[in-house]
Image (cartoon, rainbow, N blue to C red):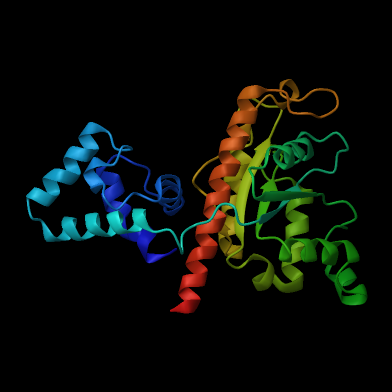
Length: 279
């Protein structure tokens, strides 16, 4: 992540604001550009206590705080080299269920419909991928369905895993597909891959156990996991109609919020990587 996003971590915490890199990037994007004739403490988006904190730190002549406050003031006045949420963002939403009327495939399709401006979501499933068999791999190589899915992932800016929950854990068919993909070129597919994780279940706790069970695998694969939001759809049978359309307005709002945060994370990550290469 870029230096500026880390730089403001402590200041945002003191101001009572979310201070993850993606939250800071979103804040800067939302409030830029601050007019040059407006002092930072007088910006209209601060609460009274936040503005007073900024004024007090400057009056106290605290060098470490003055420096970071001045850097934030400068960052808010920038009009170029910022996170641009209008830049196209391609996301592959991968459903972890084979069932034709899968709630998770329906959730992926809902994400496709509710994607914010500038984000294009393609929905993919695991159909055609066989159980991993080392003998099969030795004799016939990587199955065509696995190679096709690999290309879809490589052509996307980010991967959104849409996971069911089976017996409080990861669905075998989903883990099997990830295992197959890791046999092709694990580093190219997963290392640093911007990844989101959501899911739907008929149970009362959503997919909390499944999503937690995914974490060790995703850590080992080296993905860049979005942690600025979560979505665990419980009682999914009550949220979708017979045609698989998401009809629960509350879940729609939660999914929209998740996707907006994910989009900001994707763009902030790309901006940071671009700056790292430039340096």
